[in-house]
Image (cartoon, rainbow, N blue to C red):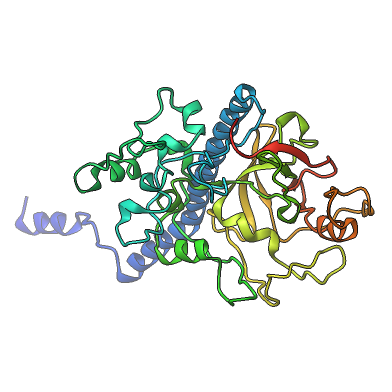
Amino acid sequence: MSARTNTRRMTNRWHPQAFTLVELLVVVSIIALLIAILLPSLRKAREQAKIAVCLANLTGLTKASLIYADEDPNELMIPVPDTSVLPEASGAIEWGGKAGKGQSPDGEVANSIFGTASYRGPAHRPLNLSLYKGGFKDFNPPYGGVPDPGPGFANYKADQELDLPIYRCPSDTGYAGGGFLYESTGKHDRNERAFRDEMMTAYDHYGTSFVANTFWIVDGITEIANRVRSQSVYLMPLSRIPSPAASIAYQEVPSRYAWLWGDWSAEGQCDYSDRVEGNEVEIPGWHRNPFNFDVAFADGHAAMITMKGCYRPAPNLGEGNYPTEGSGSSTTLYDYNRCVTIRGPGWQLDTLPAPAVLTPYYKD
């Protein structure tokens, strides 16, 4: 075979050719397009998983609360703090969780008003006794007990670093925005302002991502032998709650002021003297969906609800059908009580039309 023939055969062999620049750009564009299409779906799926965990945690807390109510002599679902130790306690965060780090009065985080040094550590949060048998060591015992902060407040700080996942919402990344301003000062609520400025998660700031529904008729409270009149799940015996499937027991922190949103001069709404007109800012929840929040109800189930303002149920119950104090002005209390009917689609913060219950505030 001649050299010319071999050359022709070698010349006729197939050689792979490289991609052209245009082809590479097309491939890169396709990959980028696929990523752009898939990422939102993956992000949405990830957030849906977090919502599921958040609701599961709320369900677990509410189930534990139902057990607590069954064992409590006063049948109270939301545990009441020991007010002989914490007379200023609202009960909103003291019911359960770890020690918080927020709002230290002296700059030392271990002395947070939500922490062990202030009797709000895990040993003093009553629901923890139902969830964690054996409870937690009390490093700041009341009634003459000797505090044991440890070297450099090590014990108090250890209470702040506890891992109690049932009290945490995975999407709790800190202040979500919103809130409302007080007319007298033009500023946000002090606790809300500190929560925003200190840039902590609610779990770290308060010791829990969730607050209890401690809404009650403040102007209607009358202490009689350590009793108060309750018009919400808080301080009301479980068997006296008329609509447990709609009555909120626990809610994510950002929803605390969402019921105040909206035009209070509109028909069906109520006036609220501390609210500043024009403060209709969006209030996102942990999952960054404005006015949508995870809550748990008094019957034990949890769900995401829309809380965007509230409405007065129709028909108006009329004077004489709202709870009043015998010693007060019936008309004045009627005017006030008809406006604390705090409700929305599928939820309520009040327990009307059930009469107010004279119930113990101090633990018996």
